[in-house]
Length: 88
Image (cartoon, rainbow, N blue to C red; front, side, top):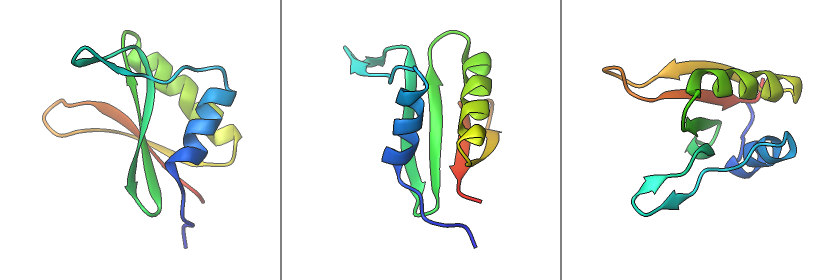
């Protein structure tokens, strides 16, 4: 059974890997990563800015190296790409 996971855990991996978090400034997101709790056993990770696919691929590798299970998805109707992160 998957274990609980917190947004703070994923955020720490992102920051420790040398990435910057995105910030909401003047009605839009600055380039960078952000995470959102999607339930007690899942955190979603997004990248805001150019090179979204390449940045998410890099984050996937880093999270998997840290022992997390990562599944790449895209929201309905061509929406945002995201990473669904869980513990194996």
